[in-house]
Length: 459
Image (cartoon, rainbow, N blue to C red; front, top):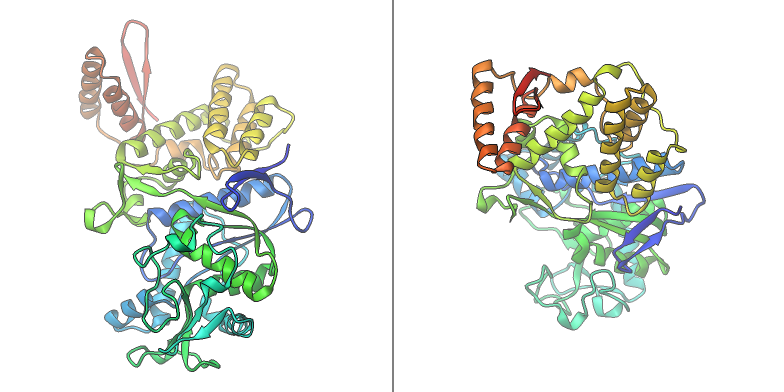
């Protein structure tokens, strides 16, 4: 079966056909490093970690590049406010990003280019755009891309030029020839430190955001490569602009398949600092173990919205506890996958269908049921092996089941059992399930017996 990926550019699923047989070249827009990574960053990292894991599981060689934006207006302001150099600030938050990614089991990309290391490539690309009449130096000294000079602008986002307006993340500047034009090279400002000022044919300055990714991706993966990914918020204008400037400068196609993961919401509201519901990865990991957070991300399809809530995290912990409980007696069995097994084939078919992780997890739970009934070590190996392609089920069952919050005392557990019994009697099953999930997250396993008697044991 072909591996199908939903291509944002064409708005349909398409078979992955690598430009170089057996080798997939993947670029993902990474973080702008001026603060700690938040839940949205966690989703991007986890989604494309799973993408590259699955491509490798299918026997493909993968070159995975995820960039680091280390020069930007926000970075410069934050460094000036903190009284530190830009390099000191960005180094600090790159280290923090790696710590967060490592905690979530995110495998490092093959390359993590920093924008400031690719200034020559950016200048060369801007020069080609100027030579081809697709860019110009405006009255303020910046170099801008001429959007109307590039046929097909708006293909990725589905936006016609006449529909675009100043309020839609379009950089408006009276110095430009057209308000839709976007900046490629920013003229140096007196208040900006010398470390973010480079010489250019158009005077000292620094690159615009969009040109950074075009230059880095083309330098490391070639002018035409297989997959470009990122969050849905980057579809316009960032990725739209990448297409225009890359194809304009190189005179040919840029990317075959565009992938965009959905937004993260908190309690069904947009995550926002102004609403007080903005969470960094570190905030979340103070309350929940890392594998639970990863499972929570994986169980939603990557293109769907992801709703963060404490109930959803407790439910994720409970689901993982069921899997690890099934593996409890097979701690020494290593993971391995027999792709001829019917459940492995169904798992593979789900993942080959646009990385359908919810369906893949449903197959894993069927496998859990079979393992609980048969206690067959080969099924334990298959469960652990398939889980590994999602970055799950790789730790000791005992370690997971005894992890998380400190073990509660017996009196507290009995109080929770009484509340659960009352909820079930009132047919408030959602509340009863929530209590059970909370207990599981604390390492307490419930076993309901005929006649309504519930016994519990510490995991």
